[in-house]
Image (cartoon, rainbow over all chains, first blue to last red):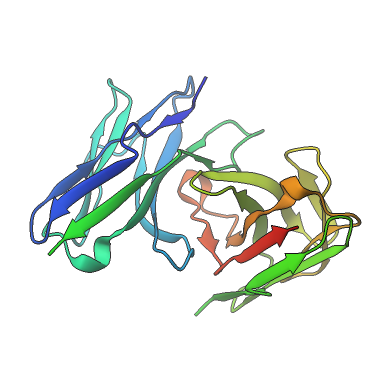
Length: 117
Length: 115
């Protein structure tokens, strides 16, 4: 079964508007961490934001925020005031808390975001 | 500040030829190091990780191997490349003291095309 599911292969957003990129995850662990990365056309993976399973508040980093709904096992990324430079692939990833897998990030298949001027 | 380098940036190799991709990290000591592969239009697949010199763990049995001869150097190798080895190879590092929040930081990647 897929551990990380990103159901939107591609998304469009108008410049200056907000956009939500979906991510659902599957784990039986109580402790886990969720990450979002941005991959522009250059290929480098850029860390955006982190949410821990025990964090009571949704994570925010500048224009990025995470809509964390633990019961639904979803961790959607919200980008506010989209900019042309936000056009990129976005990946959701999870680290499970078990000792035998705590080193490992499991990635989703990504969502390609295109910001329209 | 920490930086991570990978080279070469692009590589075109014939089937059956050897491979050596290098990754080095600056500005940190004893990092955890990782090699990932990304097929076109797909997510990342972890290939190898290392928690110290000479310590390599393999995630997926395959045609590739990894070595860590120095604290901040991680090398991905193959004796004979296959067509299926084509892809985008990313090296990453992390500091192994942050628990669940331990963030992996990625290098610029190497695009490998095997013909």
